[in-house]
Length: 158
Image (cartoon, rainbow, N blue to C red; front, top):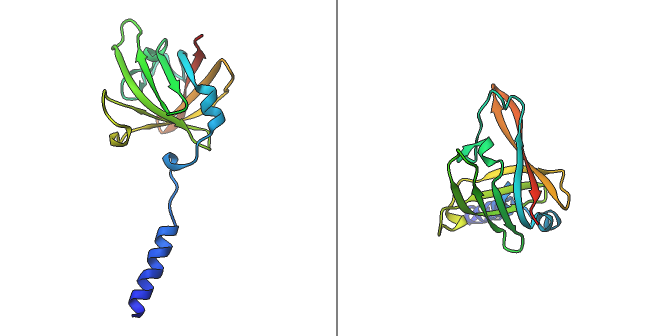
């Protein structure tokens, strides 16, 4: 009987000690609503960009994202993105996204017809310098053991 009560206590403690993760925190609705709409990446910058190639989102060289188009729908956290730069691989995909309460942009690139819950890989970027007509997404990459910011500058398309 004592073992059964002890197991019950541990079960309650274990269930009440949920770990929080980036993907299950509350959303920052005001940041999400501000991002709603059509956007284009106007630049991608990081220290050493003239020497170092960065493979963004495991899709293409970071400079291929300049000119890419993004559509963000804030009420259902879906959207689309497309790479359109000449000399770069053509790519288009639905996405799911949200901004968590810590100001982190959580992104999943989906294959056609694929549900977000089946996609295991995603990306977490910081949202910065958000205005009505622009914002930045900042990714951190390891360059020679040092974390370096890759800054994606988004400009609103009317």
